[in-house]
Length: 304
Image (cartoon, rainbow, N blue to C red; front, side, top):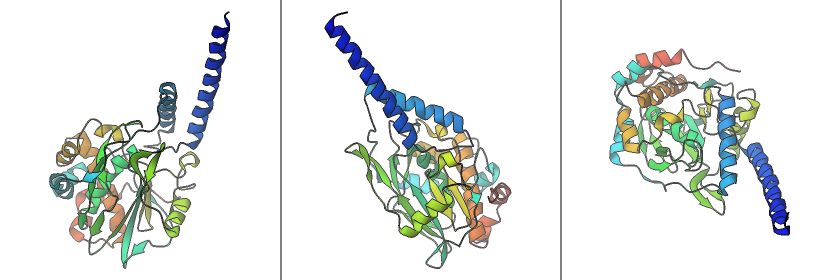
């Protein structure tokens, strides 16, 4: 064996060892976003992606920058027909909001929905559609944007809404969105956006952890606290249903009860609506007494 061949061999072995360590470190750092309890599948996907990234020498990549949502998209999301929502019921939603026991979460004298996510996160991308459909039944959304999830994560470049800077005008409900990071990479990391208050961080620490979630998905995003009575950790349906669709295509599909997108997003929205109705005392009545919400109420998760 020549010296150059021997040197290349040692270098290759060193690179392989370094790659294995990076894989192990990434797996330790990586938060699991559990959909329907499929932990093994998610672990496998994450491991494969980490190996691919190490092999190609690539890391996180920026997605399409957030922009203001088009009026057409906001209109479609905000006006999903009651008949469609009632027909779908829970649809293909896999994980309902989970009952929690704690102090009521309120803001301005109204029950509050606290959403915690990140723009790069594909599971947040999926959940935002359902959160927006549900919130629009209680008021008017303002400042909603459009963004895509990371192009180098699972379900790459999922088209979604953006909640950074968004608000809800409602007589019965308050909405506090917190997007912790953008989808733009700066110095190898996703750039920070919103910061949690100490009280908000305490809620995440308490409820986005055992016994409310499995130990291996502690701290998963998205995290949603619904009035201190229900919580969501991770996506409520499979984000794959949104793959290769634009925001306009997803928004348009929400009004088609036969669409796999509508069955996932609208079904989840009914579950979220049912949880919100539990915090608002059943107001507004026409929403909280609808057959779709009544069907969803029966599926709300029990407390730990």
